[in-house]
Image (cartoon, rainbow, N blue to C red; front, side, top):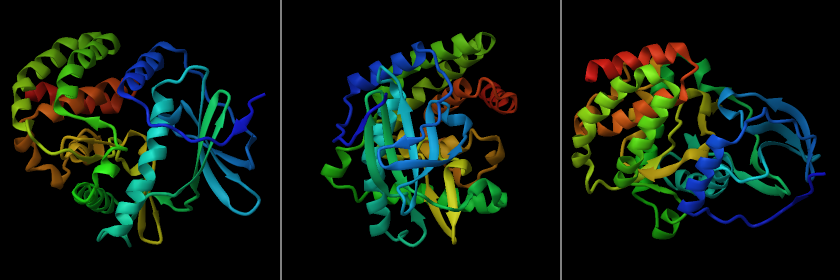
Amino acid sequence: MNKFKKTQLVKPTMLQIVFGVAVFFLKKHTPPKVIPHISQYTHISSIKKDAFKNFSLGIYTDGEEKVFIKTWTGRVKDFKYYSLVNEYFVSPILRKKFAESGYKDRIFVPEVKDVVVGEYSLSVVFEYIDGAHLDNFPIERQEEVLREICEAFAKISLSLTDEEKSHFTKRTLPFYILSLPFLLGMVGAKNPRKFPLAFRYALKNILGARSLVGQPLAIAHRDLTPKNICIRKGKAYVFDCEGVVMTLPSYDLLQIKTVPEFSGFAALSPLRTLHSGFLFMFITLHTLVNVKNVPSWQEYLVPIITKSV
Protein backbone atom coordinates (compact mmCIF):
# COMPACT_ATOMS: atom_id res chain seq x y z
CA MET A 1 0.00 0.00 0.00
CA ASN A 2 1.26 3.47 -0.89
CA LYS A 3 0.85 5.54 2.27
CA PHE A 4 0.72 9.29 1.82
CA LYS A 5 1.98 12.03 4.06
CA LYS A 6 2.61 15.75 3.83
CA THR A 7 6.21 16.84 3.98
CA GLN A 8 8.59 19.73 3.41
CA LEU A 9 10.44 19.27 0.12
CA VAL A 10 14.06 20.29 -0.36
CA LYS A 11 15.47 21.82 -3.53
CA PRO A 12 17.67 19.21 -5.28
CA THR A 13 21.40 19.71 -5.71
CA MET A 14 23.06 19.65 -9.14
CA LEU A 15 24.57 16.26 -8.28
CA GLN A 16 21.10 14.86 -7.56
CA ILE A 17 19.79 16.24 -10.85
CA VAL A 18 22.67 14.67 -12.81
CA PHE A 19 22.06 11.35 -11.05
CA GLY A 20 18.34 11.69 -11.78
CA VAL A 21 19.02 12.19 -15.50
CA ALA A 22 21.11 9.01 -15.57
CA VAL A 23 18.39 7.04 -13.78
CA PHE A 24 15.73 8.41 -16.13
CA PHE A 25 17.54 7.23 -19.26
CA LEU A 26 18.45 3.84 -17.81
CA LYS A 27 15.19 2.78 -16.20
CA LYS A 28 12.30 1.05 -17.93
CA HIS A 29 9.34 3.37 -18.39
CA THR A 30 5.80 2.12 -17.87
CA PRO A 31 2.52 3.99 -18.40
CA PRO A 32 1.40 5.79 -15.22
CA LYS A 33 -1.56 4.31 -13.38
CA VAL A 34 -4.61 6.13 -12.09
CA ILE A 35 -4.40 6.74 -8.34
CA PRO A 36 -7.95 6.66 -6.90
CA HIS A 37 -7.11 8.50 -3.68
CA ILE A 38 -4.25 10.85 -2.78
CA SER A 39 -4.49 11.89 0.86
CA GLN A 40 -7.90 13.61 1.15
CA TYR A 41 -8.29 13.96 -2.63
CA THR A 42 -10.53 11.63 -4.67
CA HIS A 43 -9.99 11.01 -8.38
CA ILE A 44 -12.63 12.38 -10.80
CA SER A 45 -11.03 12.04 -14.22
CA SER A 46 -7.65 11.53 -15.89
CA ILE A 47 -5.77 13.78 -18.29
CA LYS A 48 -3.61 12.25 -21.00
CA LYS A 49 -0.70 14.14 -22.56
CA ASP A 50 1.99 12.48 -24.66
CA ALA A 51 4.70 14.61 -23.07
CA PHE A 52 3.73 13.40 -19.60
CA LYS A 53 4.08 9.63 -19.90
CA ASN A 54 6.05 9.68 -16.67
CA PHE A 55 3.39 11.50 -14.66
CA SER A 56 -0.13 10.58 -13.65
CA LEU A 57 -2.31 13.61 -14.36
CA GLY A 58 -5.80 13.92 -13.00
CA ILE A 59 -8.61 16.08 -11.74
CA TYR A 60 -9.48 15.36 -8.10
CA THR A 61 -11.74 16.76 -5.43
CA ASP A 62 -11.42 17.18 -1.69
CA GLY A 63 -15.20 17.27 -1.36
CA GLU A 64 -15.38 21.05 -1.71
CA GLU A 65 -13.47 22.00 -4.85
CA LYS A 66 -11.75 20.49 -7.86
CA VAL A 67 -7.96 20.43 -8.05
CA PHE A 68 -5.42 19.30 -10.61
CA ILE A 69 -2.81 16.82 -9.36
CA LYS A 70 0.44 15.80 -11.05
CA THR A 71 1.97 12.63 -9.59
CA TRP A 72 5.37 11.02 -10.06
CA THR A 73 5.83 7.39 -9.04
CA GLY A 74 8.98 5.29 -8.79
CA ARG A 75 11.32 3.50 -6.42
CA VAL A 76 14.38 5.56 -7.38
CA LYS A 77 14.20 9.35 -7.70
CA ASP A 78 14.89 10.27 -11.32
CA PHE A 79 15.00 13.43 -13.41
CA LYS A 80 11.20 13.68 -13.57
CA TYR A 81 10.96 13.53 -9.78
CA TYR A 82 13.36 16.44 -9.42
CA SER A 83 11.54 18.31 -12.20
CA LEU A 84 8.32 18.08 -10.22
CA VAL A 85 10.13 19.30 -7.11
CA ASN A 86 11.41 22.21 -9.20
CA GLU A 87 7.86 23.04 -10.29
CA TYR A 88 6.75 23.03 -6.65
CA PHE A 89 9.40 25.64 -5.79
CA VAL A 90 9.26 27.98 -8.80
CA SER A 91 5.50 28.11 -9.44
CA PRO A 92 4.67 30.24 -6.36
CA ILE A 93 7.48 32.66 -7.21
CA LEU A 94 6.31 33.05 -10.80
CA ARG A 95 2.73 33.51 -9.62
CA LYS A 96 3.83 36.22 -7.17
CA LYS A 97 6.03 38.07 -9.68
CA PHE A 98 3.31 38.13 -12.34
CA ALA A 99 0.85 39.47 -9.74
CA GLU A 100 3.28 42.28 -8.92
CA SER A 101 4.01 43.16 -12.54
CA GLY A 102 2.25 44.98 -15.34
CA TYR A 103 0.94 41.59 -16.48
CA LYS A 104 -1.08 40.97 -13.30
CA ASP A 105 -4.42 40.99 -15.14
CA ARG A 106 -3.27 38.94 -18.15
CA ILE A 107 -0.76 36.22 -17.21
CA PHE A 108 -1.02 33.73 -14.35
CA VAL A 109 0.51 30.53 -13.02
CA PRO A 110 -1.86 28.08 -11.28
CA GLU A 111 -1.58 28.18 -7.49
CA VAL A 112 0.21 25.32 -5.74
CA LYS A 113 -2.28 24.29 -3.07
CA ASP A 114 -0.66 21.23 -1.51
CA VAL A 115 2.07 18.61 -1.80
CA VAL A 116 1.72 14.98 -0.77
CA VAL A 117 4.54 12.45 -0.57
CA GLY A 118 3.97 8.71 -0.67
CA GLU A 119 6.42 5.91 -0.03
CA TYR A 120 7.17 5.74 -3.76
CA SER A 121 5.41 8.83 -5.09
CA LEU A 122 5.25 12.61 -5.11
CA SER A 123 2.04 14.53 -5.83
CA VAL A 124 1.80 18.29 -6.31
CA VAL A 125 -1.71 19.73 -6.04
CA PHE A 126 -2.62 22.77 -8.17
CA GLU A 127 -5.72 24.88 -8.49
CA TYR A 128 -7.97 23.62 -11.27
CA ILE A 129 -8.31 25.95 -14.27
CA ASP A 130 -11.31 25.26 -16.51
CA GLY A 131 -10.29 26.88 -19.78
CA ALA A 132 -9.32 26.21 -23.41
CA HIS A 133 -5.79 25.34 -24.50
CA LEU A 134 -4.14 28.00 -26.61
CA ASP A 135 -3.78 25.64 -29.59
CA ASN A 136 -7.57 25.89 -30.05
CA PHE A 137 -7.19 29.56 -31.03
CA PRO A 138 -6.12 31.09 -34.38
CA ILE A 139 -2.37 31.07 -35.02
CA GLU A 140 -2.23 34.87 -34.79
CA ARG A 141 -3.67 34.75 -31.27
CA GLN A 142 -1.24 31.99 -30.32
CA GLU A 143 1.74 34.06 -31.46
CA GLU A 144 0.43 37.12 -29.62
CA VAL A 145 0.11 35.23 -26.33
CA LEU A 146 3.46 33.44 -26.70
CA ARG A 147 5.22 36.72 -27.43
CA GLU A 148 3.67 38.44 -24.41
CA ILE A 149 4.58 35.57 -22.07
CA CYS A 150 8.18 35.63 -23.31
CA GLU A 151 8.31 39.38 -22.69
CA ALA A 152 6.79 38.90 -19.24
CA PHE A 153 9.37 36.28 -18.25
CA ALA A 154 12.16 38.64 -19.36
CA LYS A 155 10.76 41.55 -17.34
CA ILE A 156 10.04 39.70 -14.10
CA SER A 157 13.56 38.23 -14.28
CA LEU A 158 14.87 41.74 -13.64
CA SER A 159 12.83 42.10 -10.44
CA LEU A 160 13.87 38.84 -8.76
CA THR A 161 15.50 39.20 -5.35
CA ASP A 162 18.61 37.19 -4.50
CA GLU A 163 16.49 34.98 -2.25
CA GLU A 164 14.01 34.31 -5.07
CA LYS A 165 16.83 33.57 -7.52
CA SER A 166 18.20 30.95 -5.11
CA HIS A 167 15.13 28.77 -5.75
CA PHE A 168 15.81 28.54 -9.49
CA THR A 169 18.12 26.00 -11.07
CA LYS A 170 20.77 27.79 -13.18
CA ARG A 171 21.72 26.83 -16.73
CA THR A 172 24.78 28.92 -17.56
CA LEU A 173 26.93 29.00 -20.70
CA PRO A 174 29.42 26.40 -19.34
CA PHE A 175 26.49 24.02 -18.81
CA TYR A 176 25.61 24.12 -22.52
CA ILE A 177 29.21 23.79 -23.66
CA LEU A 178 29.91 20.83 -21.36
CA SER A 179 26.57 19.20 -22.22
CA LEU A 180 27.07 19.44 -25.99
CA PRO A 181 29.13 16.19 -26.32
CA PHE A 182 26.45 14.31 -24.34
CA LEU A 183 23.72 15.83 -26.53
CA LEU A 184 25.56 14.81 -29.70
CA GLY A 185 25.91 11.32 -28.24
CA MET A 186 22.14 11.20 -27.74
CA VAL A 187 21.61 12.26 -31.36
CA GLY A 188 23.95 9.47 -32.47
CA ALA A 189 22.18 6.91 -30.29
CA LYS A 190 18.67 7.82 -31.41
CA ASN A 191 19.36 8.99 -34.98
CA PRO A 192 22.65 7.37 -36.14
CA ARG A 193 22.22 8.49 -39.75
CA LYS A 194 21.77 12.12 -38.67
CA PHE A 195 24.84 12.20 -36.41
CA PRO A 196 27.33 13.42 -39.09
CA LEU A 197 24.98 16.29 -39.97
CA ALA A 198 24.43 17.16 -36.29
CA PHE A 199 28.18 17.08 -35.62
CA ARG A 200 28.92 19.49 -38.49
CA TYR A 201 26.09 21.74 -37.30
CA ALA A 202 27.53 21.87 -33.78
CA LEU A 203 31.07 22.43 -35.04
CA LYS A 204 29.99 25.36 -37.19
CA ASN A 205 28.16 27.10 -34.35
CA ILE A 206 30.35 26.34 -31.32
CA LEU A 207 32.35 29.57 -31.61
CA GLY A 208 29.11 31.52 -31.43
CA ALA A 209 29.13 30.81 -27.70
CA ARG A 210 31.56 33.71 -27.32
CA SER A 211 28.73 36.19 -27.90
CA LEU A 212 26.95 34.82 -24.83
CA VAL A 213 29.80 35.39 -22.37
CA GLY A 214 28.64 37.71 -19.61
CA GLN A 215 24.97 37.64 -20.62
CA PRO A 216 22.65 37.94 -17.57
CA LEU A 217 20.46 34.94 -16.85
CA ALA A 218 16.71 35.15 -17.37
CA ILE A 219 13.73 32.95 -16.58
CA ALA A 220 12.87 30.40 -19.27
CA HIS A 221 9.97 27.96 -19.31
CA ARG A 222 11.75 25.67 -21.83
CA ASP A 223 8.52 24.06 -23.02
CA LEU A 224 6.45 27.10 -23.89
CA THR A 225 4.00 25.61 -26.37
CA PRO A 226 0.28 26.31 -26.90
CA LYS A 227 -0.54 22.98 -25.22
CA ASN A 228 1.01 24.31 -22.00
CA ILE A 229 -1.02 27.52 -21.98
CA CYS A 230 -4.70 27.75 -21.08
CA ILE A 231 -7.01 30.68 -21.79
CA ARG A 232 -9.83 31.42 -19.36
CA LYS A 233 -11.91 34.59 -19.63
CA GLY A 234 -9.19 36.21 -21.72
CA LYS A 235 -6.45 35.45 -19.20
CA ALA A 236 -3.45 33.24 -19.99
CA TYR A 237 -2.43 30.53 -17.51
CA VAL A 238 1.04 29.02 -17.94
CA PHE A 239 1.11 25.32 -17.01
CA ASP A 240 3.80 22.67 -16.57
CA CYS A 241 6.58 24.80 -15.10
CA GLU A 242 8.66 21.77 -14.15
CA GLY A 243 11.42 22.76 -16.59
CA VAL A 244 11.63 26.42 -15.58
CA VAL A 245 15.20 27.59 -14.95
CA MET A 246 17.26 30.75 -15.11
CA THR A 247 19.34 30.53 -18.24
CA LEU A 248 20.66 32.42 -21.26
CA PRO A 249 18.30 35.15 -22.50
CA SER A 250 15.68 34.53 -25.21
CA TYR A 251 15.70 30.74 -24.73
CA ASP A 252 11.91 30.43 -25.08
CA LEU A 253 11.75 32.62 -28.18
CA LEU A 254 14.42 30.50 -29.84
CA GLN A 255 12.74 27.25 -28.83
CA ILE A 256 9.46 28.39 -30.37
CA LYS A 257 11.33 28.57 -33.69
CA THR A 258 11.82 24.78 -33.54
CA VAL A 259 8.04 24.22 -33.57
CA PRO A 260 6.82 23.72 -37.18
CA GLU A 261 3.67 25.78 -36.69
CA PHE A 262 5.74 28.83 -35.73
CA SER A 263 8.42 28.76 -38.41
CA GLY A 264 7.67 32.38 -39.25
CA PHE A 265 7.45 33.61 -35.66
CA ALA A 266 8.02 37.36 -36.11
CA ALA A 267 9.40 37.99 -32.61
CA LEU A 268 12.45 35.87 -33.39
CA SER A 269 13.93 37.83 -36.30
CA PRO A 270 16.60 39.88 -34.44
CA LEU A 271 17.63 37.06 -32.12
CA ARG A 272 19.52 34.74 -34.46
CA THR A 273 22.18 37.42 -34.97
CA LEU A 274 22.38 38.22 -31.25
CA HIS A 275 23.09 34.62 -30.33
CA SER A 276 25.29 33.74 -33.33
CA GLY A 277 23.37 30.49 -33.67
CA PHE A 278 24.97 28.70 -30.69
CA LEU A 279 21.96 28.57 -28.37
CA PHE A 280 19.59 27.94 -31.27
CA MET A 281 21.86 25.08 -32.37
CA PHE A 282 21.75 23.50 -28.90
CA ILE A 283 17.97 23.85 -28.66
CA THR A 284 17.48 22.43 -32.16
CA LEU A 285 19.60 19.35 -31.43
CA HIS A 286 17.86 18.86 -28.08
CA THR A 287 14.49 19.03 -29.84
CA LEU A 288 15.70 16.60 -32.52
CA VAL A 289 16.42 14.04 -29.79
CA ASN A 290 13.06 14.54 -28.09
CA VAL A 291 10.92 14.29 -31.25
CA LYS A 292 12.56 11.18 -32.70
CA ASN A 293 9.16 9.51 -33.12
CA VAL A 294 7.40 12.54 -34.64
CA PRO A 295 8.12 12.38 -38.41
CA SER A 296 6.58 15.78 -39.24
CA TRP A 297 8.79 17.48 -36.66
CA GLN A 298 11.86 15.62 -37.90
CA GLU A 299 11.08 16.70 -41.45
CA TYR A 300 10.92 20.31 -40.28
CA LEU A 301 14.13 20.32 -38.20
CA VAL A 302 16.50 18.48 -40.54
CA PRO A 303 16.28 21.11 -43.33
CA ILE A 304 16.97 23.84 -40.74
CA ILE A 305 20.15 22.04 -39.72
CA THR A 306 21.14 21.21 -43.31
CA LYS A 307 20.71 24.83 -44.41
CA SER A 308 22.94 26.02 -41.55
CA VAL A 309 25.84 23.64 -42.27
